[in-house]
Length: 328
Image (cartoon, rainbow, N blue to C red; front, top):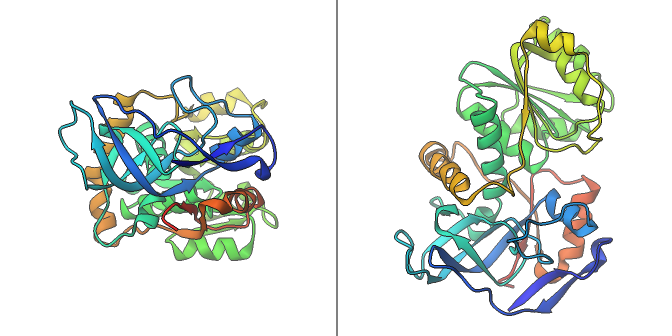
């Protein structure tokens, strides 16, 4: 098979298409012929050498989400059969023509979605569900602040939270990105380059604050996040793009009874990911099928254009998801 390989840590140009053996699959896995794979920030970090894959993952083939057709099934697989169309969260190896996947991490492709659209779902939907709703415990009627609202994660979080009856605030880096977020359902969008989100949210909420914050920024956003959290608020961290070392006022945490949490998805167990998949299929997949939640694909690149896809991801000029296609 053809695979997009990280030949050495570095710039997007280190990604090269190389022939590799089709991966083996275990009795609990399926083998998928990949039609499309999502591009995510962890792929960029892995390419740069800053995000080592787990020992049981492909070490030089990135890619955390795919969509395609099941071509082989392990002896213990009960649900899927050859010919089924699925999308799936994978531990790595998604940038290739074939990928092996644990049975429980596959999901059916919602009605009327293309394989391209389906490939844009797993990584962000698993991440948002497990962090905003499981760890952050966002409830109907509560408010959610999303930093990076125009990203793939942000576009997913906006739609999921609104569909489940929460109020949604976002920060984004331009007026155009703010308008994009509002088109997806965000109640308020704050341009962090021209506005201070602490001041704006204190005004918008009449100083009551927000219930949950989904933060992929870290750094100096952390003490500011504590200022805009409501009593019993929850800060959920999924990345630290501005730095992992922070200084905070713990008295705010105690006074407001704030819960600070976070997680990394890739290293979690197969059983955990299967449980998230089951929750998504029950709670969110019907909302996609009905059109209440829609995939947001900004750009599609052929596999040989992986360097361009990574360059776009690093530029942060995109809104929504970037997808690689392997069927062209």
